Image (cartoon, rainbow, N blue to C red):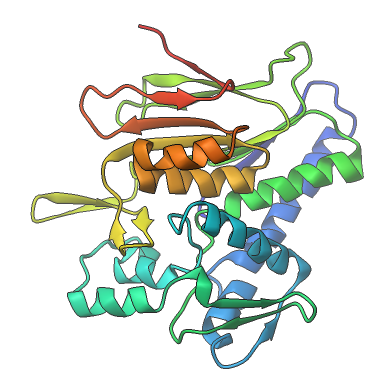
Length: 303
């Protein structure tokens, strides 16, 4: 997933090294299923053949796809894992950003949209209804892997307390650290000033997703284009510097942080009102912008 996964366990946790190694092995297994950068992965096989025929997939991949539908609906398409054609059109698949032609962009939009993914729960198969449609789990895959790893730590190893993260942009907190009932503290870096902080999130049996276009962007004719694409328009999102969401699991937090980045503070308010348990932090893309937030898990920097 082009990032580093780490697991922190309280000192004295029994079988800490073996448990963490086992959970990280599970993350590797999940990546091998979901990555679009390995031809043998289930995601790559779906992208290559699911328009021609219904493809049976593993329980893990089907579970992820089933979870995506409600999130696409909730965000009104601002999160959509069936937008891989748009990612490729803009060059972000190979991290070589480019502005597509109008014809390329139109074709990519036609070949995008989770509404064109047909799931058969009884047969556990996936069928694409649009030629050229491609899945890309970049907006949810890390969080999903962390959720499975956390479940593994608790269910197989009996571990009640741990912090798992993937690259700092996705995290899941299992329980709370000893002596800190408010949860695991995580500092949110300012996207434009790495030495500054937006504030601190406290996680307890919850996931965190952070979306920003800080490290994947390109400039063209004086304009900067970030890698977070609005699936509804096919254009890179603009106007948001950073979006973070705390949710009941890391996959949901990942997906909703992507949607929050796309929608911005005003439009995302509808989702916030529908999901009362969320904590949301948004920073507009302005020189003197300050973060706005909703929810109890975030403590902003004062002053």
